[in-house]
Amino acid sequence: MKSIKQIIIDARALIADKEHWIQDETAQDRDGASCEPNDTQAYCFCAQGALIRAYGGDLKQMEWIAASDALERAAKKLFPDSADKTNFAYVRVNDGEVGAPDDPDDANLAYDLAHENILKVFDLAIAEAA
View 1 (cartoon, rainbow, N blue to C red):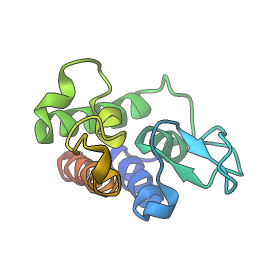
View 2 (cartoon, rainbow, N blue to C red):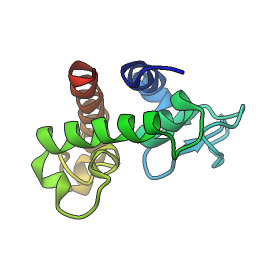
View 3 (tube, helix red, strand yellow):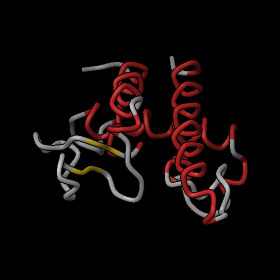
């Protein structure tokens, strides 16, 4: 079984290249069709989808929960306003709901910032992982 830190490292590697990162759904194939993160055709992932793919097991296991919790803590530390609605602060950062401008004229900037921000969340979670 992978360590929590390794799960997070592997998940970050999946989305480090913006070409393999998405928002608002867990995974897509090369044609942009939705698929499950563990599908062999999955090509790009959101933060949660990348974590699911990197873990690859039962999402009720302690390692999955601990890895997800590590991202949650990191997101709340970096973006305190991400914690005001749900337990999925890192998903809100990934989807650009926090830490990125809401201005439709800056859609590309918002997209770029959301990607940078979620990588920062992963980096902090990796640094703090046991």
